[in-house]
Image 1 (cartoon, rainbow, N blue to C red):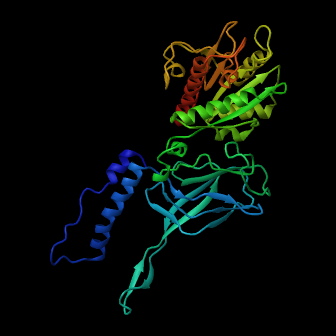
Image 2: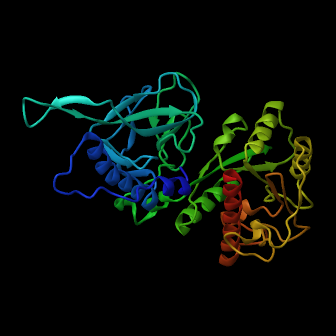
Image 3: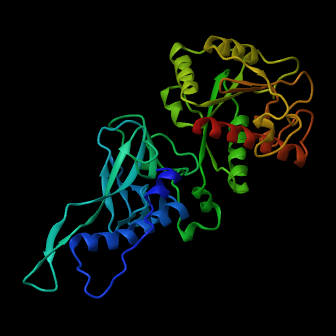
Length: 389
């Protein structure tokens, strides 16, 4: 429900009680709906849907196909208060793929219950909740509790060994939107903002760790800055699950050729409003452009991608940080290129190496690292806008 729909549905009048008013069921319902609706709209407009407290998701011990949702409180996508008073088990059974564990609000049909006068019956509407694992949830499907990249239908589900980089079949808590007062300060407060995800995919000769560390450094810098939090997954395969990522960082070293399935995965990702950021590693180069650059241009030509030089004033240079030109990258020598088009950003600046503190010819300055990280934030912002268009 967008802001216009909310404003149209917001009640603007309430019943004024007077002596002798006949309190029928309809009058009672309207009087209470006024307060319920205004409370829902306050929750949505003041906080938005998300987790107020608790609702941690943990694996079974020993791990099996079930997870447990611990007690807690959330605001639903419709503004209702969802309360779990006791731990709840949820069995993923044979569900497979990039699963989103969602919490939703519901109400049961009116049921009779004992009133203060034992000779009468009062009907009660009981608040209920639902928990469901979905592959491609819509925005109003529910409050996200966790994600699980399940690679095998029978795989047991475990707690993440590294919470910042959950592996397949582990519980991923990074994308929970936590909005309660307990999360108003500190790193967890970032979850009240839109959250971005980056997949680091490598092609060509065996890759070193530089660009993975660089992407992690960019994610930490963005979370610390309090803007769009970025979470990074390393060594992500080029397969249909790319669709769950805001940005794919494709790093090459040496010549390479992708399979038809990998090409189809990239094409589908771009058609689904994904953004592809391409760089080659320049760490071990002694001369001109790396062979992976030529392979990348061949790949983009096969995908039908048309790139143009990024002009001054382009969002990649202006939002959220302003640049008159792309900042220096890993190497200052040679012709530098920053190209963009059709959801693809190509750079031969090798910002990935610079993000984690390396520069050709000696250590970079603090200002060079900061400028590269801020430009990386622009790339993420560009991908977020493209995904939301």
